[in-house]
Length: 416
Image (cartoon, rainbow, N blue to C red; front, top):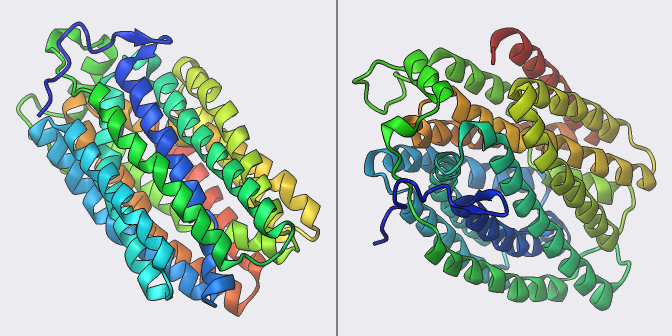
């Protein structure tokens, strides 16, 4: 059991950010090094090594994300009730780290489904408490910057993990279009190491106890807008703006299927495994470079404008994936897709924190992550069915259309 951060010390700065924010960024950095090495090429492992169809791949990704998402609300609510955000995050990261080595022996898609599900179960436990702890550890004036930093660290880890994967693929199979089983097994062995190291960083992270008098005027207005003074941390007491935003996120995510389909699209246009990894490295570099400036700008001009800009780029990118006809065009699309992520991902989480009072953040982030995660099953199944029965392009047309509807909804229905 760890002690909470003393009032007055919880925002002690490291590189201009709260210690908690920085160390949680390191945890995400190491975890993403691991996850990208092990799971980024999973669609190719399923397709090339195990012979799974796109419908099965969509089913695996959708079930893993969706079923695990049922825990995201509960873990967020529990972190509000117990005030133990750190402990729940440790359990979640630990479960994922202990699951990853089993990919080494995966020989059927059913076993992959079980491993992937358990890994996402860990994410379901940790995501809401971690994001709530980040919000607790940053003032409202620097909240966008804090989430932008976390996204940048997360994505930088992904870039490093993908770079390691690219080197291994280059050495073992060079420009082969098909992923080889022995190559994937080596990626698993090396990828487990940073996941274990990430757990040790939690020795430097503490829960935050925040006195009422330390709330800013903006935070007090959020509390008064969203709740009665004696209301409990439940779903019904969360304010209307937040609920409308959840509906809009549902619409957006219904067309935002697993990124596994982007990887399959890249291979579908003739790119080798090595080239796909290099594209993903570029995507994550752009993502990381955009995240912090986007967060800082959102602190000044508002979150909604930045999210809408990101969604405009998403629509154009998905239309591009639908119309792509040459392998070189996929490189440009992955770079632009990184800009979308950098603009929208961290800022959307900061927006959630803006819309609810502090003591409801765990519950709110749990609902946010659950809404996104639960929608991934129908989204991935729809994309897999469209790809298999109509054409690969149809899956991306559908995603662009849903994003356009969500963008209009955010513009019309949700105010800052």
